[in-house]
Each structure stands twice: as C-alpha cells, then as structure tokens.
Image (tube, rainbow, N blue to C red):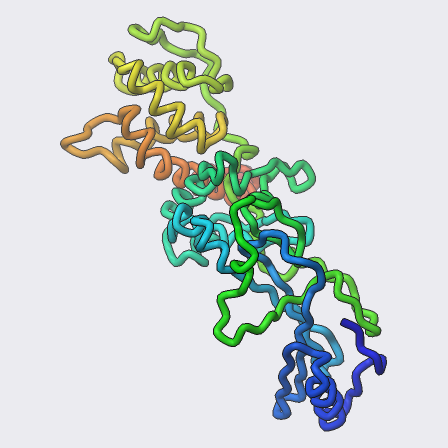
Length: 374
C-alpha cells in the first residue's frame, strides 16, 4: 500500500479528513482516529498468497502526529487451519501458550531471546513450571519434526536463543512457512468475527520514509537465562569406584550416552552416601534416553545430577523417598534441580560482581584485621 499524497498532513482535522476520504475510497482496509490525543493509526494488508500459514507474527504501525514519530506493535495471529490441522490439539494449552510467548520475542530474523523469567511471567507461573513446559515444547514433534529449537549464539556471550522452525507454521511478518500438505484453502480465514485482515507486512511500501525497526529492541529482554553454554561449578577429578557400575574412569564431561549418564549418577550417589546405587539398566536406560537426553544438553544433565546430590537432603528428601533415584531424575526432579542450579549461578555472579570475589565473611575478617578495606 502506498500513500499517494506523500507524507500525511499534521493538522488533526485535516488528517482526519485525509484518511476518512482514503477509507471511504477503500484504499485502507482498516483505520482509526482519536481526536482527543491527536493520534491516527492505519493498518495495511500484506501482499502475496497464503502458503499454508496457521499462525503469524504481525506488526502494526501507527503515526503519532503530536510526537511526529512512528510506533510499532507486534501481535500473534492465528488462522483456522491451526485448529483444523490438529496442531493446537496436539500442542495442548501449555505448550501452545509457551510457543506464543516465545514467538512474541521474535526479531526480524526469526530468533527469539526471552529469558526463562520472562516466559514464566508471561505464562503466569513459577520458573520451574515454565522450564518444564519449555523443555516439553523443545521435545514436541509435529509430523515427526520439531517446531522449535534452542540454538547456541556465539555472539551473545555464548548464551542460547530459540528459533521457531518453518514447519511450525508460525511466520514472522508475512514470511514463508513450509506447507504441510493437509490444509485446505478454505481454512485460511482468520478467527476474527469482523473478518478484517490487519496484517502489516514488512514488505509493504509507502511514500513515507520510515526508519528501519529492529523488533528485538521492542521488548525488555533478559539474556541471563540458563542454557547449555553456561559454566557450571568445578568438580573434583577424584572419582570413587562405582562398585556395581564397574567403571573407575568416568569422564564427567562425556554424558552423551545413557550408560554414561547412569554411571555418573552412580558415582555421585556413592560419593554422597558411601554405598552403591544398583540401577535397573533395562528400565533406566530407556528413561534417561527418552526423558533426559531429548530435553537437556549433556552439560545441563551434569549440572542437574550435581545439584541433586548437593541439595537433595535439604530440599527434596521425604520419608518415602530418603534418597534420589534415576526414576525421580527422569520425571520431576530434573526440572527442580536445574532451577536451583540456575539460581545459584546468578547468586555466584552477583557475589563476584559486588564483592570482588570475596565472601562477606572474608571481607569482615579482613576489616577486623585491618589488612584490607571493602
């Protein structure tokens, strides 16, 4: 869509008349004016044929005649085909909510940088609950393929970010999606009772010269969320014998196989309780492979196991479950332990930043001796 008369007039009454004429001539699909605040906005349609979209991220641009600037809003738009194809039903309400929250932090390259805290706030739940559904969404498959993945970003201090894949049918700014092959053309109507298309494509042109907008700057995003690239606490290289496990030289960084993970769990168990843990290999290998390795990276699994044995007795011990097990680890305990590990990392970072690496006790001792100052 192009503005044939050049830059819009700045006088409010003239502006109202200008766009009312355009609206009556149906050059604009939707427009609105607020005389009280002198604010006029228009929303333009994006061009091109529908290519099997189920969900899209759209941008609404509005011109503030008082401040003489453009404003931008982002929203998620769902098509009926998202329901008729079965995508929403298979995702379920929790994974669907997390997908939409992550998508709302998407930039123009399709990358999303929300923190776990931001996702939890948008979800209205605890960080532990949000983490569980984030991992569930990462493990989710649609037509045997993932809809979202976590990617290492070397340009952002090694932190990871999320990429929503084309097969998820979630397009950014009228971008292309991968056809599913089972969506009918009559399903492309939006779920809007007024049947108004309010999408503004980034490719839409006008006679007004507009600055480039980086959508990732719209949100207050915290990049300090836990991911596979964070460093974990150093561990002793002295590993006790595993007894029934039979491996006395386990590399804690090589947790890329279910057997290695179980052996590492057994080593930590023996170190903590001075007795052997007897795994049910047939059952536990399946649990670790399907419940842990499909959700977490090896460095996360190591951090989870370390945290479990450091904190279990004070946080999760019960009369019926006096010690941790692989069954617990593969179900609810991994999410809890990962959240604790992330919190400890933030605490350690703040401690170093505020006190130069010294603990409060060490600083007080130095002050008492008169040998140093804060």
